[in-house]
Image: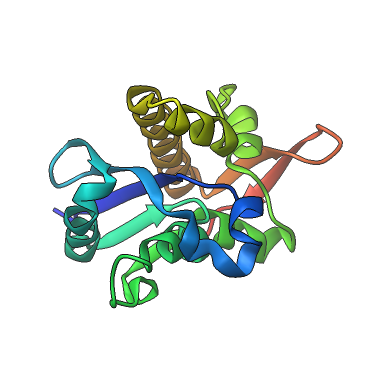
Length: 177
């Protein structure tokens, strides 16, 4: 059986705090979450367990995320000399961007495809981190991983995804995985 690892992480700092998008590595991970089809479950990683998270990603037959190649992997690059972009990956946002010619949010896809929305956002997760509310971050991150998994599976099965465009219109996008 193929081990697909769905992945997301939250950060300790905001882009503004680290001086812009060129400094993504300085954001540092607060919580990382995976769902492994091989294991059949979720795993939550604290920053002190980041090496275990990286090892799990390396063992995956496929890493699936939403904007994980240019964001989440880049955050993890501050913890490893490995080039995580060399791992077998499917970045749903990048795949949709190829088709749509613009970026799209996970929320836009989830709300149109499943009628569900994210429970928070990255800035809220940073506030929770500062308040020591790691359980809330983990719960939010697990939910994002679950939505990412649902989007991937729906796209794989139906070869299309729905999304809400900037005018809140329901639109169809080709899923090429």
